[in-house]
Length: 327
Image (tube, rainbow, N blue to C red; front, side):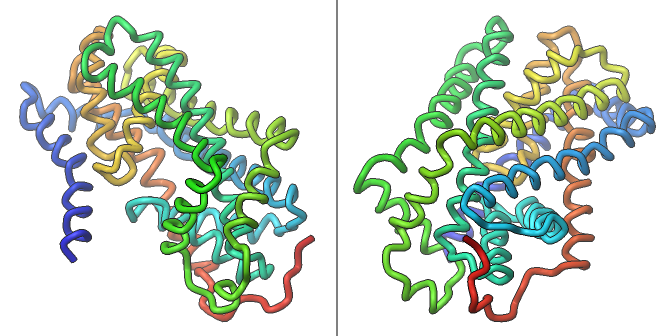
């Protein structure tokens, strides 16, 4: 209970940062005024692009599954992915990703180790592409991102690139998998299956190869959609940021948002923008307004889509498929 309470308190650091930023502003009404008066057209288009982004991620996930001989119908994959986003946005960590593993187990009889391998590779694609964009952003803003912020940012890039490599180290990888297995849904048949850790490592490493020639470009495309959304939001607020500037800003904010001190980067994003926007010729109020609309158009909309998906195709509760239907 103490650990749960501590984790919950740590997650409040981000929102508290947002409160601190707003309290210290000279013109707090400017933030509300900017958000309320934002142009509806660009905001609506930015919100609609979430559907494109989800579809690209579903296509990438299906490609990873097919590489392992698993054929998952597009409509069902869409439901599983959207519902997992809903859970993931409302809970700390990657609980939503684990829900996708449960869908695979229920619908196709896919072992948890096999499903986990596709989810991990799905996330690794995001992390490595994000790290590349962040490196460009930090280099671009090297005159602005200095001191401790630069150390934290470059440290985050290094951690993003190096941390997944532990899966390739014998012994250490097995211990890490044991820790992860404790968070997975319990299934008697799966627990009885020998060599689950080895199966996971084999499946994960099988994705490293020619398949990345498709999944990595798709991942880049998903980020480009995000950056276009940010550009539209800036235009809705009347902020004259170039698409390249938006790319750099959102990349760095996304990396900082991975810190376990908030949910979906709430507060951390706005705090970062309030610091860097004045250096770009804007005000801290502009930065907070931009961050709040990014959260609304790119995160709250995903929660709404996931909520609808939850109602139409709720997570499976019945026993898993007894007959595996994959290659």
